[in-house]
Image 1 (cartoon, one colour):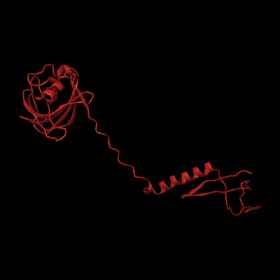
Image 2 (cartoon, rainbow, N blue to C red):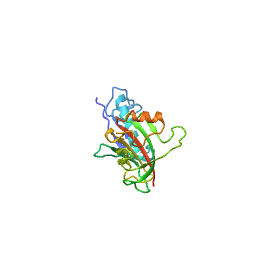
Image 3 (cartoon, helix red, strand yellow):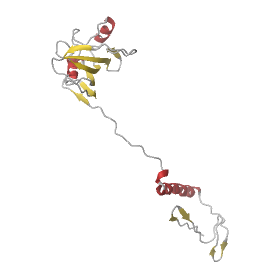
Image 4 (cartoon, rainbow, N blue to C red):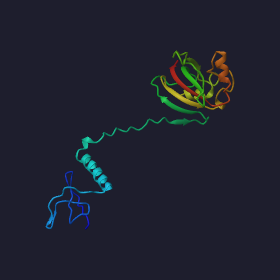
Length: 206
């Protein structure tokens, strides 16, 4: 005889009815029909499916039992601006002070690294945190062209990161910023023929 299972959902209960005599040993069967059921042997796969369905129904009936879903926020994207000279600029923090223009005298801190992240020079001591800001005139005779392009339009208090190609970098040894100490100066100029990454913080427009 075939085992017939009818699934009737009332709340979260499941009603099973069996017709006829089962090979699995259902007790309490009379000629007139089914009087009582003491045990029903179900395949393991079917049992697991019914158990899983019960869990789903519980979550539907009681949504408070479900794990809370955290709010998903879009990650902040830092856009890169590429200038015709090849300089690539990222705006890290927009300042709120005076804006720097051609010919202005500015005061800033900077960190210079090679494109592979290797440290070259900085106005901020890596250990003590003390800084020695530099002052630069924003013209072609005082500062490297690539850094001037980075600083133009910045507002005091702002921070930018830029990749400066060698064609607008240290094309001669007189351009600033450049360390006064022999060791850092030599280290910086030894990498003058490769792209350099500058992270600058504009402190003041004087």
